[in-house]
Amino acid sequence: MRRSKITGVLAGVAVLAVLTACSTEEPDEETGATDSTSEEEGGESSSDEWFVQADYDEQEQQMTATFEGNPDEPWLQYIDGPMTDTSQFATQEAMKVCFANASISNPWRQTGWITMNQQLEVLEESGVISEMETRDAGDDDNTQIADIDYFISEGNCDVFIISPNSTAALTPAVERACDTGKPVIVFDRGVETDCATTFIHPIGGYAWGIATANFLVDNLEEGDRVIALRILPGVDVLETRWAAAEKIFEENGIEAEDHFTGADPAEIKKIITDALVQGEVHGVWMDAGDGAVAAIEAFEDQGVEYPVMTGEDEMSFLRAWEETGLTGLAPVYSNFQWRTPLLAVEKIAKGEEIPAEWVLPQEPITEDERAQYLEANEGMPEGHYAKFGGEDLPGYPDAWQDR
Image 1 (tube, rainbow, N blue to C red):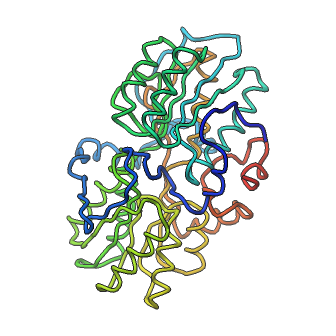
Image 2 (image 1 turned 180 degrees about the vertical axis):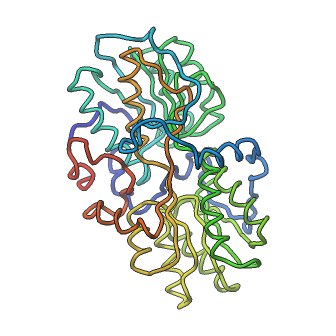
Image 3 (image 1 turned 60 degrees about the horizontal axis):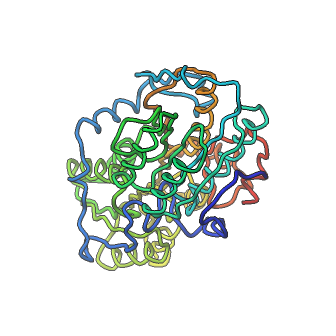
C-alpha cells in the first residue's frame, strides 16, 4: 500500500491498535494533559464549561435531518446549509496537499489514516493531487503548531488539511493558514474560528451523548448506577459527548460517576473493579469504545451480570457484544470522514461549491444491525472500525487487515 510522504512520529504506531483510544484521542492529545484523573482522584468534571444549549438543540435536530447526496456514499453527504464558493481555486494542475495531522496514535485514527491514503492513491492517479506531505504531531499542540507554520513558510502548499490536536490551542495556527489565501480544510475536531474553506465532521459530540444516554435511560431504572469512562479532558467532541450524557442522566435520575481513563485498559478495569466492590453497577457509558473489552472483563472477573453498555463501532466491542449477549449500542463518530477532506480537494480543484460546515451522517449501530457489520468486516483486526467506508477503494481489504 502506498503512503503519502510523511514527517513525524509514525514508526510502530500500528501496534497500539488494541491498546489505545478510539474515536478521537489519547493522552496528551486533547489538552496536552498526560495524566488520567477521575473525579474521585481529585479531577473535576468540566461538562458545565462545555455545555451549550443551542448546540445541543441543533445536533439533536440534525440526528433526524435529511442529508443531501447518495446514501451509498455517506462520506459525500451533507446537511443543506451555507456553501463556500471555491471557483477562485479552480485549476487543471495537480495540487500539493499539506496535511497537519494531530496523530495516528489510536485505532480510530489508524483506521482513518489507511482509508485516507487509499483515497489519496485514487486522486493521485487521476491527476487531482500531485502529493500529500503529512506532518504528524504525535498528540502535541506545540508540534502541530510548528508543523502548520512550517507548511505556511516552506511547504509550497496548494491546499491545507488540518486535523487539530486540540480546540483552542490550534486556533491561531489555523487562522494563519487561512491568511495565506489558500484553501484550508479542517476536519474531525474543530477550532474556534470559521475561517476555513470547510469544516468537515460528523454531527458531533452532543449527538453521541444524546444517543448513548437515552439508550441507557431506556434500558435502566431511575436510581440505577452508571460508570462513565472518559478518555481525557479538553477536546470538543469528547467533552460534549459527556456534557450531553450527563444532562440526560441527571434529568432521568440515573446516578452517573465519570472517570478519566487515559485510554488505558488496565485503568479501565481498575475503575470498574473498584466500582463493583463499592456496589452494583447497572450501566457503563463510554466516550470511546476501544477499551470496552477491558470493562467487560472486569464484570466477568467479579462474576456479576453484564451491564447495559455503550461502546463504539470498533470490532473488538462489536465482537464482545455479540459473544456476551449484553444489552448494548455502538455509537459512531463516522470514521469514513477521513476520505472527505481529499474529496473536498477534488471539488475545490473543479471550482465547485462545498459546504462551509460539512456535516456528515452519524448513525449508531444497533443490535439488529450488528450481525451485518460483523459479517462485512470479517477478518478485520480488533482495532478496525466498522463504518470506515473504504470498501470501494484500492487495497481493500488487505490494506486495512495488514496494518
